[in-house]
Length: 164
Image (cartoon, rainbow, N blue to C red; front, side, top):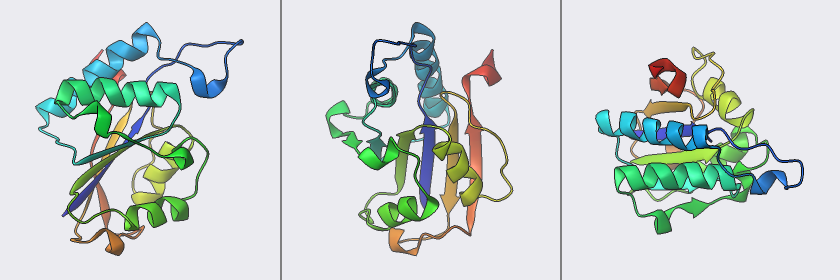
């Protein structure tokens, strides 16, 4: 059994004088990332591998969650393709190369890609992923090379406003 967790970055500050990739989390974003970490802890979701977009807001979201769940921040991988809009095929090709020792892998990225990917991975799921939203998918496979767009099931969908 393999699991993929998709997390959209938390709310970022707006800035006209700063490049998009360098935008940092807002205070609300920091609070929401900590809340999502607590929710993941309650669900006893443990990550074997965390992979983030290089955008500051995604990496900060990943680092906050890593701290809360006691995942070493230095072990967060940075993947440039997660910053751009990417296709399901690009994502699946990346996933197929993961080491089979990893059972649960989390990806931190952006919309519209995170929402589009969620819809592609579970056709019955049609929600838009809000900022700091988390979608957990389960697959009945033992090897990442067997990952496909079918046979995946959403096992949870969490987001900060659900708890406010």
